[in-house]
Image 1: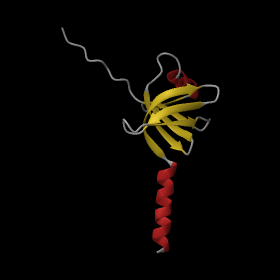
Image 2: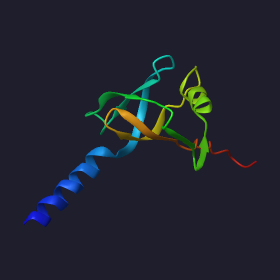
Image 3: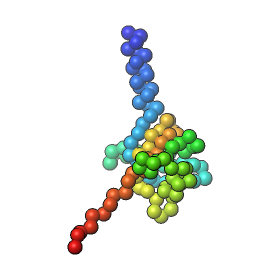
Length: 108
């Protein structure tokens, strides 16, 4: 019985600590190093704010990038709209920017 209880507790802690999924960018605050995102199913979206720190890892597709490059991607008029985010509580541990979709062009 004790093993089952400990295994269940470990599983719940692991799932609760590392949540990953696609999110939509709402607002990025460079001074506070926070990012506000919408997550969840369409119609049931919830806004959450995550802190970024020196331990947060950023990826552009599969290549790791520096925080300065990620800041450029999240700010300005051409900011990315969506990315994958893994978090430990209120702190983002990993941000992965999705590949841009290429527009289809007709062959002449």
